[in-house]
Image (cartoon, rainbow, N blue to C red; front, side, top):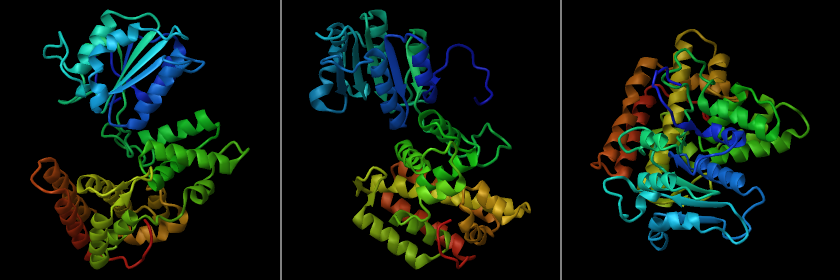
Length: 394
């Protein structure tokens, strides 16, 4: 995918899992690894449906979570659980969420709990039984699962990472709307709802809804219902159904920052930490450590779009073209163009505020609220020198 020439088996991309399950049999162990919970949840349900096509008749699906004290103590006995078949089914699926939370097991040694469980289940498979290990750890990097070891044992390792919502580092010269997330959205609309969706419109949906796959899936369902019997989705359908305005306080804060409105931005930021925010599933986040990533992600997505627009205008592209490339609907293109008429070099320099904020929080030296306040202050100060003066969402 990134042009490398690695040899040997590789982790499976999460969107490929349903097709692989249809091809035939699967191994005794499937590891779902990555930060995207939607992929892990959907993958688990797809595996259960493969093993138990008629559903769980009772006792054929066992779920354990290493984060829960009353369940983590049962994880070392997973192999026995796999061998104990249901009274009503020959198939069995044992799902272990967050296996890294399991207590030490006999024979584990220095192996991670996930690796130990997977190796044991592969070496002593139970007929008709599948062990699903689901973890937020990725398939690459220092804190990743032991991908090569798992693959060498014959287990499936499914890469459930978050998808890029912009062209990846390996995709040089690619159009702004042509990225992993847009391609996935267009593909899912076709596979699940049997309707065509262009990459440009899929990109526009991701800009309106965000990168949360659960929220995107809900948006596609609503869009398909709105389109009805028609075979293709139009840009007008997207603009009408997904929504033309963003009323959530986090987006009003983003708009104030992009407009260089210092007073409004600081007032909204203070209100955010005092009252909390609703996430895309309706839950309220009130802890600073939960609010900071939401704020940073929303600000970064809009700032990056602004930077893309500024670079396009500097190259001589029209406002309509840069707005379309950024996923901005036509009726907001003029407002976006006013905001984007900034020096790209100044915006690139200002982009360092995001890196500083993230490193400050990750390093543990800067409290999340302080990091958010510094980030907003730097951004709004840098953007206020050229305040567009046109309200509205970009």
